[in-house]
Amino acid sequence: MTTATPTSQPQAPFGEPNPSAPGAAPTAESRGFSIASLVLGLVSIVASSTFFVPVAGLVLGVMALQREPQSRTMAIWGIVLNGVMLAGTVLFTIGALVFGLAMLPFAFL
Image (cartoon, rainbow, N blue to C red; front, side):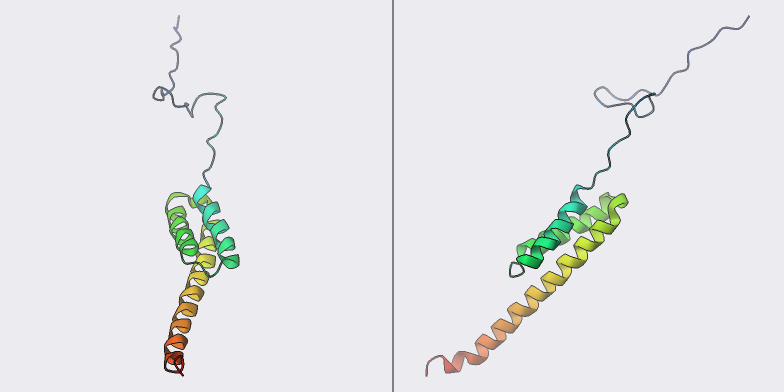
């Protein structure tokens, strides 16, 4: 005669779903940072004269690379778009300052 012992499943802490339980829903993938970085990259194309939008997009893109490996492509696109727009904004600002300083002696004629 054999006695059956119940098999125990690992218990999750109170309030958290048990991923090994039968019928448990798979965990949702988080893509918030990479989507935000990509959206800010696209917005920075339209609002290219701003400085803060591409910087925020770069920060979110780098955070997405570290935290969300499943959405790496969107994070890389966000970083590229924001980096290009930030470089363009910086170059335009430097060019405008140089042109303004070059034209300063002629301002009082």
